[in-house]
Amino acid sequence: MGNVLALDQGTTSSRAIVFNADGLTLGQAQQEFEQIFPRPGWVEHDPSEIWQTQLAVARDALAAAGLAAHEVAAIGITNQRETTVLWDRDTGEPIHNAIVWQDRRTAERCDELRSGSTATLFRECTGLQIDPYFSGTKVAWLLDHVDGARQRAEAGELAFGTVDSWLLWNLTGGRVHATDASNASRTLLFDIHTQTWHPELLAALDVPAAVLPTVRDSSEVYGETDPGLLGGAIPVAGIAGDQQAALFGQMCVQPGMSKNTYGTGCFLLMNTGPEPVASDNGLLTTVAWRLGGQTTYALEGSVFIGGAAVQWLRDGLGIIDSASDVETLAAQVDDSGDIYCVPAFAGLGAPHWDAYARGAVLGITRGTSAAHLARATLEGIAHQVADVLEAMVADSGVQIPELRVDGGAAANDLLLQIQANLIGARVVRPTQLESTALGAAYLAGLATGVWDNTDELARRWGIESLFEPQLADEEVASMRSGWSKAVQRCRGWAREGP
Image (cartoon, rainbow, N blue to C red):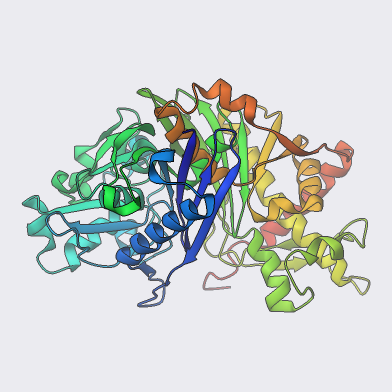
């Protein structure tokens, strides 16, 4: 019975994958759900639809694997982080749509907090920037804008949770209200040093403690599923936010080990071990996971536009028919012809944090071709990742030997070779690219005896392709210098004034 069901609840779809004890996929299913945009800058999901789609794909994945509930050792959950749900403890009904991590409705509240007396406390205790991205100001908004919510919350009638907690509640028939330390660390309410909800932060956001879930390890049995849901009771035994789950799925279990996920954006995480590393370079300090009561921390940097830059070449410019065509087009030239594409379509994320930056292509000449632009776009993605990695090395003092990669664009060999060249370290693509779901499965399987320890899992991690740096240091330095100059040209572009 060494099979584990991973529930991967993402921003646009719910997925489920069944893995066997060898980490191989036995069955999977995926279902998209509605994106709700009530106003510009507001993004919501229907929590009931999240639950229904996740339950449906769990059933479908088990059917595809040909497994009954008694043949599954455990369920692991990984989730879109920071998305906020508030529901009635008695009925289990949400009192409002979920507010999604992308939502910016609490920007003014965050501005107030950044200029207030608790700004330093937030940074030191949570390791986060004060930003609408995180859950704390979202739940405060719900309490203030849903009729009667604050009074009901203070009376203990409401429950708050990120998506993992919402799924756990529903899977266990309302018996368990909990989260894991990795998701708790993304709320602006959790002290990552003491591993507790912080009363001063709760007071600053006016969030009553009565709504909060219990914070537990990332790998332990939280409870069993209601038998009627999946044909029998299955232990729910692993939870981690999606990027932390990918770090674990990539077996980055030693300090200095790092992974990058190439999705719509890019998320780069470095394991920093048992001590949190404060960032002086615009990164986040976060909980990677907590096992056996022992916390492992990470530095995190996010790039807003990664694979979305390739989508722009396809949809905006029409120079490729599908995203996979970019590699063939870019490979038609040996270099980018000294042009730089800075894909700051939504501003620049870590380590620059410039909301007013805008995208640009610089250095165009009469000889510039579509192939040069395609290659410069791939280089722009890789340069952004290199910027984050340089900040991580500066913060941690650790030089990385390799960067493990996953996500859709990790299938692009040319991109990964460019990445290796720019960071001066090997880039490793694993045999199993489903790192996020695999990480959730690993956490659940560790808690239920499918696997004995992380050493066993690390031995199972395999390399599909390896990319070694191929450029001379001088050439890399020239490219990085040109990139820095291009970024400076883009900064503050949308700011009012001359």
